[in-house]
Image 1 (cartoon, helix red, strand yellow):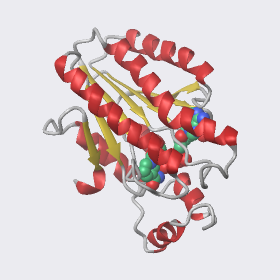
Image 2 (cartoon, protein in one colour):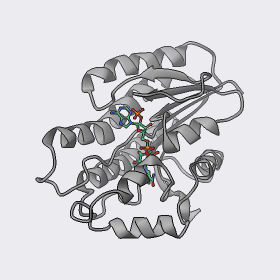
Image 3 (cartoon, protein in one colour):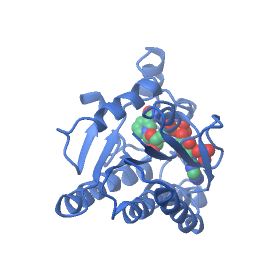
Length: 240
Ligand SMILES: NC(=O)c1ccc[n+]([C@@H]2O[C@H](COP(=O)([O-])OP(=O)(O)OC[C@H]3O[C@@H](n4cnc5c(N)ncnc54)[C@H](OP(=O)(O)O)[C@@H]3O)[C@@H](O)[C@H]2O)c1
């Protein structure tokens, strides 16, 4: 199948594993600052915490979609950051701004650009927002992050309902579980003062409970092949 796979945050962790495990012979595109190490992956360099970059990235997505008669076009928003971990009001204001713009706003705006680009296509189309078990929960030190992930869950529910009425794009919010990525290293290195819940994550690591990124990515691709999961759903991969 002639498949286009676009992943934001494809340079590291889960996003990188999603590109590594993408359907065979897919055309793979990473949108990030540093790029996926595999030369076969097209790199669209962008700082997605900068709203000025979104218009150009959106245009590049539209160009890619229009460049060939794809049979499947998949967009996954995996770029994200926990930075700045700490209590709201105590952390760096610029880092908070970047967190809100990257985690919440860029995903919604690029999701919009993807849906506009694939709107007229009569092929298999999928849009995935990477959510989190922290979505909407009270997690001291992660409030801005968990608010952004809750926003994704709400966005996916709403846009999924829209696409059921017209559009036909499959939309899912996916929480991957606790995955062994650089983000988890950052969590474990955080002081309890900024993240009181840190010990649980150190214990999960010490007990070998972290999920391999390739396993989480493979589970996500399997999920996309499962037609019983309806559009607009939020799925926690640990519950499957
Ligand atoms: N790991 C977990 O346990 C876990 C659990 C639940 C949810 N998640 C979610 O899974 C997704 C991937 O996280 P991960 O664990 O794989 O983290 P990671 O290894 O730190 O990767 C984060 C990715 O986001 C990209 N990114 C960060 N800031 C960016 C910016 N300003 N502009 C463009 N790209 C940016 C990074 O690329 P560059 O640095 O190259 O720009 C990188 O590819 C995130 O949405 C995260 O919230 C992870």
